[in-house]
Length: 446
Ligand SMILES: Nc1nc2c(ncn2[C@@H]2O[C@H](COP(=O)(O)OP(=O)(O)OP(=O)(O)O)[C@@H](O)[C@H]2O)c(=O)[nH]1
Ligand SMILES: [Mg+2]
Image (tube, rainbow, N blue to C red; front, top):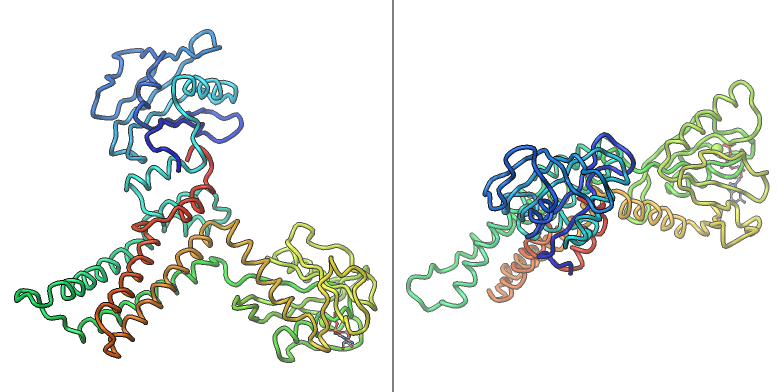
């Protein structure tokens, strides 16, 4: 674990040249280090001040002559982002200058911050909970307005509030239950109202389910993942589309060019619902309606989360399309002939059903892998949903035990489990594994 009593420093301005350069420090010696070699234009800052200070002046930096014009912003702890004293050194935004100032701070006792370490300290000092820590990452990494919106809502505590309130109520119930266990013979302990407790647990289970639903809709801010079948005419795309859906939806025929418009339908892949899209076959024919149909296909492929690139034993390969989209290479009609390179192509047959289950798993894996690694909001969703599912199972088990008269000790075990799972979401119970998963994904200086 990183030592939170070190003073850490990092460049906090964006990489590359810019208008302003910024080095940020936090920790017990943040003020002392930033003030070393600094002379203010007017009244020097008071190192023991209990309020924020800001001074323009000159910094004497190792390896740089003359002095560097700089502005220092200083905040005493604990009412800072990290809960510790903090400073920022602002200067002109030339990369070599910023690096020299960082080296100057490191030579005076600061340690280079690890990715996410500023936010880790904010979390450790109780300034923010885990969902907000992840939202900071979300705001930094957001690629679309919808992701930014979700990250900002999360940063404002939209998710944490209801979970904290629910957890508090369950903690009360748990305290009541445990008091009854320990002091069952004492006169001033309320006898436990089992029907009241059962009502509380049932209500909590409904609330947990509703929160899991909210997360599910937040998981994909822009709707279902779009998986698009492409390939040459007659490759068997439409028959594969029908086979994956489990019903006849698209027209299938031995005539090349059967599909003109694209078709779409929701489809289940190992528990993940996708929007599966069948498109017109691609070839070099570029006239009239074929060319219009092919431009629809290209448009669909360009907007795909995953392209299913189909090749078959009896058609020539299609011209390349949507090269920058993630894709799976599919070999169709494997009942007619096996794939030339089984390690690179996923062999399927819509006629026999061979290879369909592995294809469904490969689609789910490709999309889920993406969500867990690349989309911070989705990864918060996945982590929180896991905990909410466990909490809901424990609540159901507690109420079942209660209903069967199974003993208050057992109810208390399940209830504590539910409280702990909810705590994981808002950071009240933290395992190193969770911390590692979250903070390693930050960039340095945040
Ligand atoms: N033996 C065999 N034939 C198949 C299979 N899949 C498709 N076919 C046949 O191949 C022909 C073309 O199938 P489609 O699914 O219409 O092909 P497509 O790629 O949608 O063609 P276009 O819509 O013209 O681009 C049809 O006669 C299908 O019955 C398969 O797995 N095995
Ligand atoms: Mg077709």
